[in-house]
Image 1 (cartoon, rainbow, N blue to C red):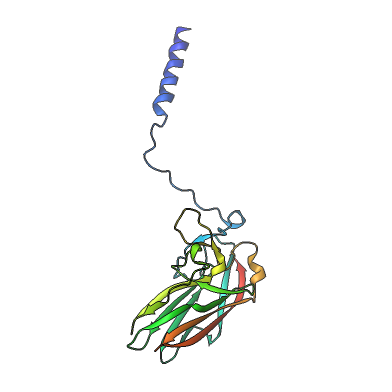
Image 2 (tube, rainbow, N blue to C red):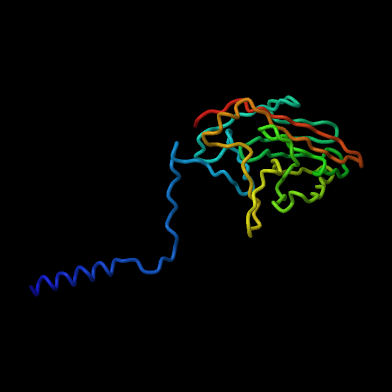
Amino acid sequence: MKAAWILCVALLAGCSASSPGVVTSSPAEPPLPKGDAYIPPAIVSGAADSTAPRPGSAGALYRYRFRQVAPSSDRFTFQDRELSFYFRPTPAALFMQVENRQDRPTWIDWERSSFDAPLGKTTKVAHATTLFADRFRPQSNTQIPGLQRYSDYLFPIDYLVDPGSSSEQLHRPLLPEDHAAPQYQDRQFGVSLTFLIEGQPRVYYFRYEIASVLPR
């Protein structure tokens, strides 16, 4: 009986010694589940660009392929005497790089620009610095100095989501990557950007078609 009692005390002491005390570091995050077990978030913070050949979220159920239909370009580019454009459509947002080809400043007039959403609604344009509180406020013009480049991302301003007490830019992605994705096949979206060049407004219109939606 005494031996059994000693063994029990020893076992309890061993368990106590091996129990964790104060956790000083967070455990490693488990890997994302694959396939149908994972659905990308319906709300994103900002929009992180990607250099991957097929843009999209890690673990997305579907991937998109895009086509620039106006002005037509297989490289998502356009240029004239004043400006040079490069676009990268992604499910999160439409990424844009503009180069001012002249040695004088030009401005993007956000208040006179608009976004045609994939489901057909036309709204004002939101970009990297637009917050939920700015939905009904005038947005300041963005200057692009002479011979300089400017990068940004664009999406419909109606897609902004209230972040509560946070200062984050939360918004719905431009396109879903879950089971709703196939219904966007062949749909189009676009942006109309107004630039002030030597004090005169000039409108540039770009339109994109969803060429394919394929399961990963």
